[in-house]
Length: 219
Image (cartoon, rainbow, N blue to C red):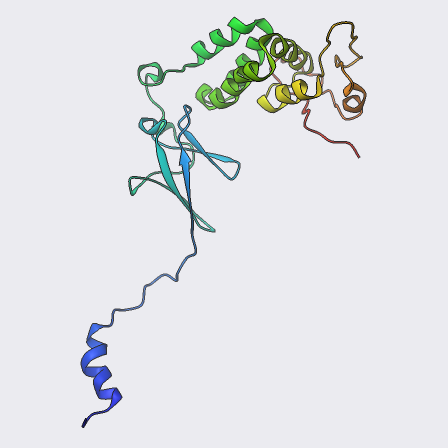
């Protein structure tokens, strides 16, 4: 064959070549997430909002070293929390509202209602407290309504307003049961002495000002 590899390249390969991309290849990971009732998804411990119409839908998430992209049916969404994502009349399209959640918590008892109310009041948008509030209410199924009410009473006394704190109180039985006495910090149960060493009371006059995190360990 009377030709050279260079001649073949210039006549066959070169015309088919495309220019190199302007940006270098970027490694990305893909995950799936379900949109919660608060129209946020959780990715590696952080919550990102999506349009409220996607509540309960599954979305694809593309993660790179600099960007998180949220896609629904191959359409890109917006990341971080934007007020534009929030509905004008939340109750029209979402089963849960702040007032309904607070009322439902109150059906379990006044102590259960208090931390849920404080969670809502401490958020810029009350809907951002839906996940934590509903989580507290679901603890009644695991531990019983009576135990949840008692644990929320301890959380109220300690200003420990969060799902993790209420769950920790239930796990460690840091509330008085039959025949038990509370210590000076309002704790009871076998773990009360251990937590007494790590609890730091801030002493705020605001009843919804957090002053304690019960997830601490001891050395």
